[in-house]
Length: 480
Ligand SMILES: *[C@@H]1O[C@H](CO)[C@@H](O)[C@H](O)[C@H]1NC(C)=O
Ligand SMILES: *[C@@H]1O[C@H](CO)[C@@H](O)[C@H](O)[C@H]1NC(C)=O
Ligand SMILES: *[C@@H]1O[C@H](CO)[C@@H](O)[C@H](O)[C@H]1NC(C)=O
Ligand SMILES: *[C@@H]1O[C@H](CO)[C@@H](O)[C@H](O)[C@H]1NC(C)=O
Image 1 (tube, protein in one colour):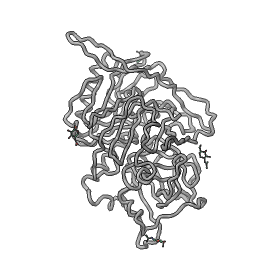
Image 2 (tube, rainbow, N blue to C red):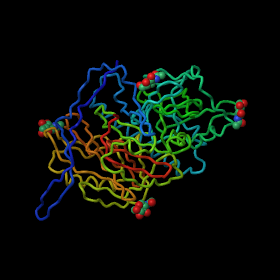
Image 3 (cartoon, protein in one colour):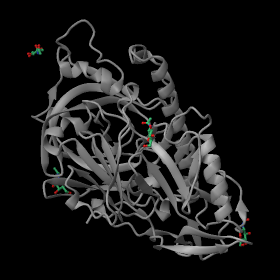
């Protein structure tokens, strides 16, 4: 029996125009209404033993998996204020580790990975920010895994296990699956690990031993084990001979999930391995974080299965040979309430989109411009102290509803991403006494910007690796 924490859906309303009259000019800002009154936390009496079984369906050749937030899997009663605060601190660790990976890779281009197999591991920092989950079928078993667009190898915790964190489902047992096959060191699959995990397969001198893998997520989290092949089912669609990691030594709080599904760009990702079936295209709609709503992960590019209410707006994926796992885009501008901002880094390429980072990070000059314009338009509200990486906060507990400036990201090719009204403010306190602009600054101008999952909510985000295009469309996420 699992108690499901559950938030009444925030009342989301339509976009409308609001007139703000200055002494001698008239501004017409685009705003969105956010109802604060209904932002209450409620515990649903848990009586749902099938809480773990995510649904899937097949439609017009696309396979659609139900996607949820990991917080809904916790059996414990959660102090939401603490949880919301902790999530930001973990997000900061996650982004710092990504930035250090970018730096290492940039300076060690060409010799990537070889020395990293011996990289010292530090413990304690959790991967809780990689926080959307789906259920896949592996060797006839249902396994709930975290969805990560920032890595490639899919893995599950495996018996016999040397070190496994607590997970909710029973461990995967290769010896009870007749379709399980070890991958040997003499295979090219073992060699492809170099690119997928930036660590070569660990083999020793005997080429006939099984190929062992190591994936370090850079923040002390890791998985190690044996590379293997197994029957994968994505919904009802089979992917035979799927290469995955049978993890025997895994550390990091992976949200109690059984493992992780890598949706990155390299050969070993589930996208590359299923490209004969799905054409290298997938998309997701990330549900609003706290609403207990479900979103979907759709494999395949048939857009008729999407429920988008705006057309899909595509931009080019910017190639980055040194960071080939990640999806980079060319951010050409940001507008706040319809006012286009100026910043030197727009149009220089290189912001990455990631499902595993929560809060969007912007170069300091871009963030300062965003903050200044936001404060200009969202004025007259009592300020509140900053929290963690968030420095633009308000006490909105005295309000029932506020109009907040619309935020839009612009990309090469006149592509636009409209930030959903649930993605603009982060509620540090559930009573709205500390509500912060959900964007943060990087420490340095030359660090890589990241579009986090908080700003991707309630949109269809389409990744087309074959055509190197990424698209955005407004959608109210729901699985059904
Ligand atoms: C896996 O989950 C699906 C959907 O919930 C269910 O129909 C199926 O029976 C499950 N399979 C196993 C082996 O538990
Ligand atoms: C690798 O070794 C295994 C075990 O001896 C053998 O069955 C397989 O054919 C070899 N594969 C290659 C590509 O040499
Ligand atoms: C980004 O897009 C802008 C506008 O289309 C273009 O001028 C610029 O060259 C692009 N930058 C990169 C790095 O591709
Ligand atoms: C927030 O505002 C409310 C209503 O205006 C006030 O009663 C409360 O004391 C404020 N809370 C904090 C933490 O400042």
